[in-house]
Length: 224
Image (tube, rainbow, N blue to C red; front, top):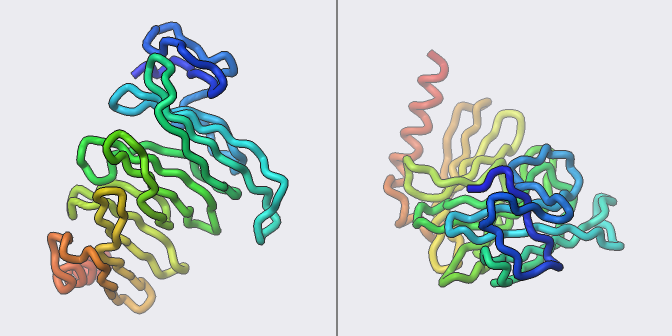
């Protein structure tokens, strides 16, 4: 990747991103280079197939129920020769996270993860999957960050429910659909584990009983 390169503004076209000295005229940085401030920040991401995603925010004239000003996020997907491949848009509130690209289901193609709102701890993420060279909205999750969990072989996200309660949601992603496999609740105060099975539970390599047993064993081990 050209880690030092800066990218093309949405309004420009037909520039060659592959040149090592290429710079974006407005200095749009890579998303992973930014410090999180809680304010919208334009940024860009390069995908493994050498295409470019541009994330551009525009303040809206409306506020959400908490009094925060909403922003419109326009996402444009470009080939390296400047060809516009696709555009997407989202409405975004105050969030303490940045857009990400990651292969969350280990199929060799990256997904777009867009933070749209952050509460006390958890962030709401919109997930777009690349299906036949087009990004489609696959679903929404809430938590600290969605990632591929190699141990279970599925996308997973942790979220905080209270000072002593945590959740681990495991999902199945295929053909533009993000489907819950299960949600594991760990209550550290009562030292209990419980599970809610989702529609994609059959995709889990472990049964509900095995998942709960592993959770309980983990808490017992932490006490020793």
